Structure formats: structure tokens, C-alpha cells
Image (cartoon, rainbow, N blue to C red; front, side, top):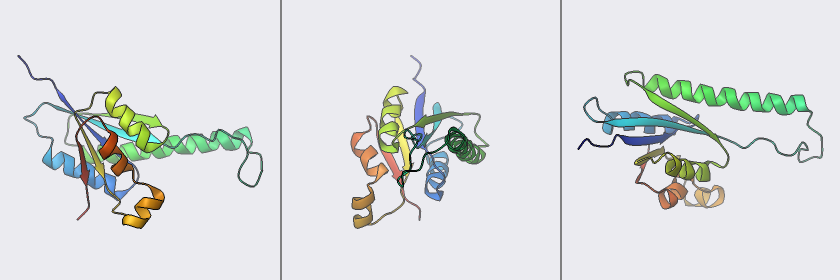
Length: 153
């Protein structure tokens, strides 16, 4: 009986921490001899639903389109940077989703049946983490697979 190909999902964003986690994953979890598929996940923030900003100004359709274009360019830039780190690997699948990162990461892990989730940690202290929330903490508690949180040295 042949083993199922394991799926390792790495959540990437524009931070150094996520790229470090990807490098760590490639060095420690992926090799030429094992059957592991690498999934690179980037979560874009949700689009501007309301055409008003906080001061009550109306955003024109052109401004909204420009913001969405920038969001897609940023996502592609992040993925290009991640794929450059994976250059020695045969292939890594790009997955770009949109929404609140912590919820989207957990749901995508389940949807794509990932075996392991690898994430970077910004290394926020207790108070900053309490105020801002921690995506990695949330995913460690709610993802339906083992989660590896990689801290930068």
C-alpha cells in the first residue's frame, strides 16, 4: 500500500518571520526522498465593502479598484518571494485566499486537508498579543492539524 502524499501548508505574508518559517520548513520538513507536497498560503485582507471611509468620504469605484489591484499585486509579490525561497523544490502550490487571516488559515487547512501547518511568529509580548491578537496562537488552538510555530533566532 502506497503512502498518501503529505501536505505541508506554510502561511506566508510580507514579513521576515513568515519567510524564515518557510526556510525552516524546507530545511527541516521537506526533502527529496519523502513524499510531501508544499502549499503556500497567503491571505489577503477583505476588500473594502463600504464605499465610505471613517471620515465619511465616499470612495469612487476607481479608488476601490486601485485598492483591490494593489492587494493582488502584494499577494503576487509575497508568493514570488516565497517561491524564490523554494527554487530548489520541484513545485509548490500557490493558494491565495481573502478574509480574516486566522479564520481563513484554519478553514483552508481543513478544506485542503493539510497534514501540518507551519507559521512564523512575530514574537509579540503578552500585552501586544493580548491587544492585537495572535494569528499563530489562534491557529495553534483551532487548526485541525499539527501546527509548527517557528520563531526567528
